[in-house]
Image (cartoon, rainbow, N blue to C red; front, side):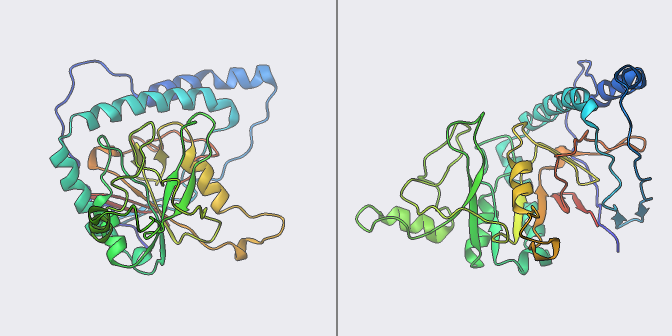
Length: 310
């Protein structure tokens, strides 16, 4: 089985400023790491050898175990490398016009709705996009509503430092008849049911207090559409730094003492982004430094890239 990588990267004006590559930070730490290991008398666990990738002009297979995740001792270097990478990607996103973002977004949704994972899904977890600086989800939400999908959307609230992100089931007709306007009903039919929802710190709509609280439980969501600041061709994801999605995915896929792995319903994870957010690895390393808690996507979509991790 193979995975598709069709790469036509988005070209942006190059900066004349000298930038520090995230890998430089991580590799500098790796040089002194053996000395630190001896001083701390730490024991290094054996890592499996990565499987080779099969690549042709249309598809590339990425086995699930190709990425070696960082040990706890690497946490400082990984965090520093991630911060540098975040700064670089945000600069690229800032250079994009709203028209370009909308055009690229629709190209991604056109591909996503053709995936069998979407077509077979009865329920979809999807984020409501920020006003700028990321892929716009309006088009996909319209498709989900038109296709009769059950929708779950994030709720973080106002305490961003300590909050646990939840996904709430969307109830389209939750408004009282006396307070629902014709404009509200028209927006619901158009798929933009969240236009008048309250906004959080990032100016992202969140479910109103009037909507019944039905929190997603393991097995409720068939397909989770995941945002990211960047993704690499191994399916690794760079988030905004709060860990909301990593923790949520872990909870939704957790095997507890009362369940078995066969009893946990598979959760399809699809990362979506714009072309400039795809990070291609150099050498044989992962392009995005990762820790054990970082969740990897099964599929990553951008306008010019379809990455399937098998």
